[in-house]
Length: 169
Image (cartoon, rainbow, N blue to C red; front, side, top):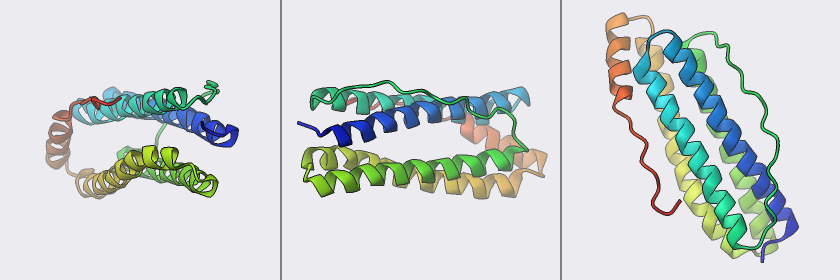
């Protein structure tokens, strides 16, 4: 039901999502290392969400008869300049993921693969939310990074985030 080309792109996206999970876990570890456990929690939740995204794509590809090929996942960086650097990298990474998903949608549209296009609409909406959120956090971390009291409050804010699995995942 799905072409080899679209299956290949989705397999690549599964690997991208798994890499993102590791990348965010690395960011979480960095914040844990400096006792900003609330921000570490935020990135742990991000990591779990990325794994959920990979699972959704895995299941979809299986449902449409595509061959699932688990690709290599590169080692993410573990050294970062500072908190601002991490949030900026997270935003840039979300933009990269968005472009990758848009590429799959474009190719699916070109092939008239309406099932894949429909499936990926959830991811498009998710990426709009992810980029907006990441952009807001870049702004916030820039405002608070030099103010220990404000950084403490920001850390407390992000400690409240919990992973909520998508019931359809």
